[in-house]
Length: 274
Image 1: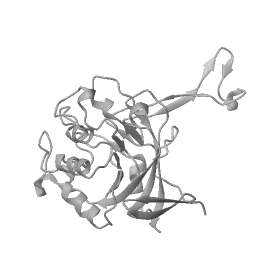
Image 2: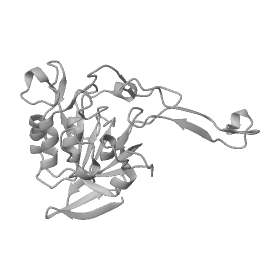
Image 3: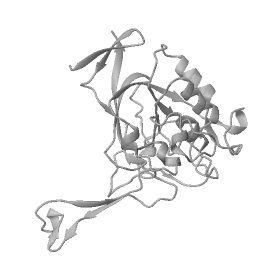
């Protein structure tokens, strides 16, 4: 067993580095895959250059593919404040990497009609919301360590999410303004969601939860105005039912794309108290 001993909040903790738990959706270019916002499927085709073809099945000396995708819409991805600003801030610049102490919680969304929480614009009565109340109750069941990241699994959970096409104005649960504010108050820097967006798909471009989490004033598109430029949001993850709620180390693996978002591979390592 490969373990790491560390201290957080005055507590001695042990992480099992021999038991990595990936929570990214594998992106199958030739098979079923999730999509969002009517984006085209992610695709890959052999590269061609003169007489060279990047496919050994077609006589090429090696395989070399050209990949086309929209990171925000094709599978698990991580984004930064540059997602909503005029300045082109890249996720590579904003997210330094390394491991973060993370709490995994499972929450049941509620309809807007049953909640006193909201967003801008106000949700439709049938919209499903990830509320501050639900998050607070889930977080409160665990010991009060200062988490740096949170992974939110929405219930009910299903393998169908691995290839679901999220279409329409409100195809999945999203965060209320109060939920995003709760996470900021709790000091959460990295948010991992199993839904396609922290906000409603059609919210007239407000992206309220994104702006609250990045510390941007409502409607602001100016990156220097962000109070939390180091924060990140990962969307379209999938947390298998076999992974229990509780404490983990989060290794947020991101390629060095100079873009506001990039495909990502979040990995969890179980943590226990020493």
